[in-house]
Length: 291
Image (tube, rainbow, N blue to C red):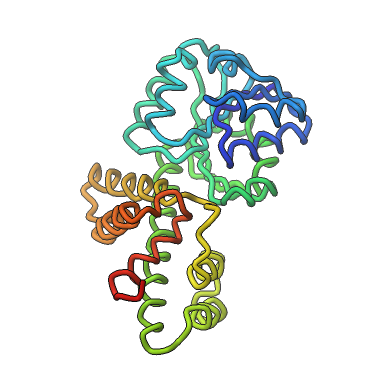
C-alpha cells in the first residue's frame, strides 16, 4: 500500500520504519527534513510538502499537538488537496474539540477520518507492539487494518465515532500521570521513614500494583532516571490539559487533573520540562524538603 506519513519524531520515525520494512511504499514528511533521511535510506520517499504526502492511498499523521496538526494538515492545504475516499489515520493525542473540527472538515472533503491514538513509548513503537485505539467508519478501519497490524500488537475498536478513541486516549494518559503522582508522593513518604524508594517500588510492583505502568515508572522514580525522556514532561502537561478541556466540555469535574497540571507546571519551572514525565515525582520530594 502507498502510505503517507507526516510527523517523524521518535514515535513517528519508528512507526514509519516498521511500515517500510513490512513492504509498504511510504512517503514521509517532517518539518525538519533531516528526520526523513534515515527513512529514505530504508526505502522511503521524501515529500517536499504535506500536500505530496497526501497523494497516497492512506495517510498517517503523528504530530505533536493541535497547533502543529492544524498547520500541517489544514494551513498547508494538504487536506484540501486530498482525493475523495482517502483514509486518514490520526494517531497523535489531540483535543476532543479539535478532532470534532477535523471530523467535519474531512467529511466535507470526502476523506475518511479514523482516530487511532496509541498507548506505548518509542521502544514499544519500534518493536511494533503498540496498543492502538481505533474509531471511525467501519470500511475505512477495515482498509487500514493491515497497516495497524504492522504498527501494533492489538487494535482496540471503539465504534464509528472518532471522539470515542480520543477520549479513551486522553483518559488513559491522565491515569498514567495520576499513577506517577501517587508513586512520587508515596516514595517521598516512605523515604522519611528510612525506606529506600527502590525497596518500596519493588514491593509495590510485585504485589498490589503488578502492572507495567507501576513497574516501569516505579523503577525510574526510584533510580531518578529521567534522561533521556521516553515521554517528555511538557507533553504530559499538554495531555493533562486535554483531559481538563474534555472534562470542561462535558461538565465533568477532574480535580486530580487540576492538581497534576499545577505540579507539572512546578516541575517545568524547576527545569524538568524536557525530562521524562516521571520527573513529576521530584515535586513531592522537593515539597517535603528531601530535594
